[in-house]
Amino acid sequence: MDDNSFVSKEIYWIKEFYPGSQNLLPKNLNNVLAFGIIWNIFEGVLNDVIINKKGGKEDFSYYTKINYLIDSYGKKIRREDFLEEFNYFLKRYKDKDLTKELNFRDDKFTEKKAKEFLEDIFANSSEESPCKEDMVKALGYIIYRIRNNYFHGIKPTKSLPSQNENFRNVNRVIINLLETIKR
Image (cartoon, rainbow, N blue to C red; front, side, top):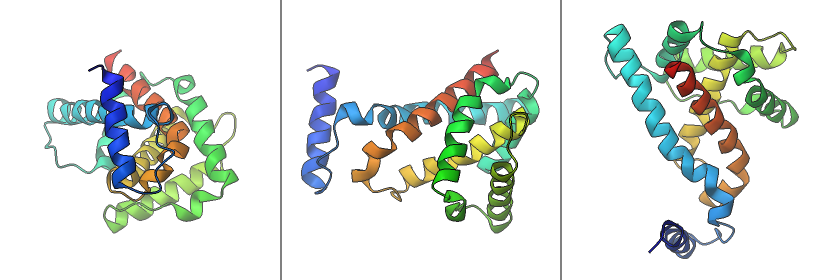
């Protein structure tokens, strides 16, 4: 049995188990399916960075980890590596006015801080702004929100094909972050 038939059988099972998900086809889900593996690699590397460089524990919040990543690798970050994906999410959030829906489920302080940060970034973005560190931080917050919506079942399974482009951009951001760490 080749890999495609395995995925097809799994998707077939999902369609049978979860009515209304008839548009689930492997070709419509490639970025969504890749995300789980890419996220796993990213989180493992992120934990290693925190533990090895900071001597910390794995139980730091994601927001602390992304800020530490930026502090540790900020000089290696290249704004142009993240600009296309930032502009994609900026356009998406502004066009759909999704800033009203920004919802971060960590502690109250972080939730408010993350939401205010993104609202400010989106409201004040220009060709020169935000700086590369703030751009990556904003993308990190967006990635985490999408990750939580995906892994915690907030996004209905039948809507995943419509999220494929979001996941393509998320995957590219994570890959660029991993490549930045590797440089």
